[in-house]
Amino acid sequence: MDTTLRTTTAGGTGGTLGTRANASSRLVPTRSSGSVDDAAAATTAASAASAAPLRANGSAAKIASGLQDQVAGAQQALDYLERVSNQLEALKGELTAKLAGTRNGSRLQLEVHARQLAQTLAERKKTGGGSVDNNLNYSTKPATQRFRIRGLDIASIKQSAPLNISFSVGSAGGPQMGVNIEPDQSNQEVARALDRALAPMGVHASLDENGELVFSTPESNWSSVKDSIAVSGRGRVTTEELPANLAPQLWNVGTETGNADALRQSLREVVQALERVHRSQAAASAALQAASAQVSDAATPPPDMTIAIDDFGKVAASTDYESLIALTSALVGVSRDRVLALLGLR
Image (tube, rainbow, N blue to C red; front, top):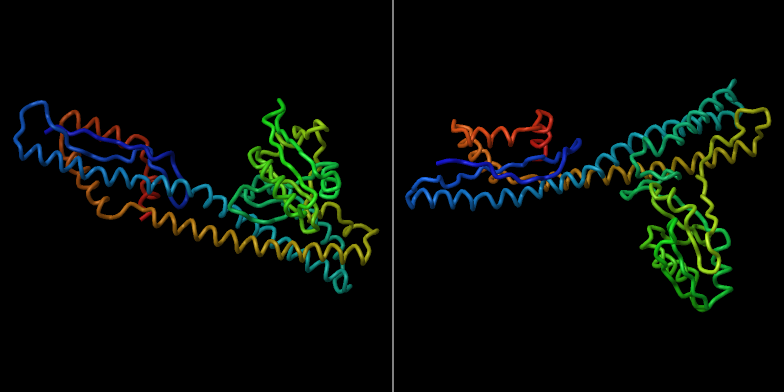
């Protein structure tokens, strides 16, 4: 009885906690061109039927591979946040010492630490895993860029109500989405209405901590959004990027003009940033644990793995040409690292 290899594709290679098998294969005996008896035909049908669960459980590899970006992002975020936390702690100590006058030469140390932190913050987009925003907040979603639209604020919108506003995003004008604003709507309702209109275009609206209207979009989308938002009656509008809360490059802690008030303000910023970093570390750790658990749950059940191994062994024991072709095709690109990673999913 000849044998062939029936393959299913489960994606590309994966990362640390799971990989996607390029050729997650299922070995299925097939009927030969010659005559076979009923018993052999029944055996073939049974073997083919047993393939279905394993192919279905190939979704386990897909689920695991779908978590790879989240896992990698959380790991990178934790590494990045640890660096930032250590630098903030060092700055906190130096600022406290300088304010208390208990350490000689702290001005130079402050200058060095502030410069190091500014450099680390500047590298965030490259080393933060894409999930830490410029205020050091972590999210399982891509980091966002917050901005304002000049002349479009809650006060002016409500003053002009009832009002219909249409938005478009894109260099060619893009699709237009409109929203009606009524005089009796609350600030929060106005923000939600704007958010519903802008969401299909990858932009969101909300109220900040001061109750002011603020817009946001994924950082990866910012370059295509910032100069291409148009509002009905006004045409292309000016967007203003909201800066990060922490800006050590603007401090004067290392200069002679530094004063106690400026140092205390810098210390407050450092302490607040540390609190955000600690919250983000906890959130990233929780996300990593959740993703690891999902990868574990998505592992192929041992009984199906046993069937696959048994089928593979049967074909491997055969020396006919078709079996050898099936085996070599299945093993192309299967490295030792990929096998170990797949075994780690169990």
